[in-house]
Image (cartoon, rainbow, N blue to C red):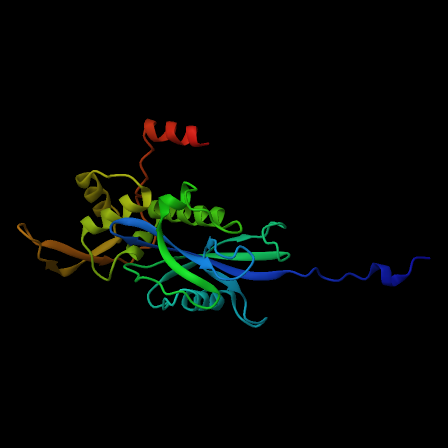
Length: 250
């Protein structure tokens, strides 16, 4: 008769981390925050900010906020932070079975980061350099970063996420710059203005205008009460040239 102890199950050893895809606009271009790893594995390589839970009682969202501050010296402040996805492939980390709960963070005008804890350096890197593979990332962070950027691009179509890239007040021209930077394409100004105004509750005027050089004052807006856009602002289809370029790269 088989020993009953042979049927005793013990849970596998699994470690949990949080990784952050932090996006902002710098000089009208979409940038993602990367850190240079100061420890093995992948010492010296660029990676997304992140790390292990401090203890088994730490909430995952609290860990994400902590890592935002510790590894980049960026205060949480007014930062849009949401859970992106869970990554748990068995071979993703040479230290063992490590599952990552990735988060997407967005804020306007974020300052130059200062590396902390196990990061040797931190810097804003253009998103296209990450997506193209020009910048090599540790672990499976290229996949996570690409997923985060695509998630932001899609949410701009159906939600008010674009306002998270703006300050407390902004012009429609500045909002258009957000869409163009995140989507990576130029938009027709009149058509964009019409679509934004058609999405009721997306943005609302703040009652004051911003003076511009040599022209009429630009009307200022703030984020409205609606978080879901109706009708949505659909992303333009890529041009034939862009599709051919992607096909050649693939």
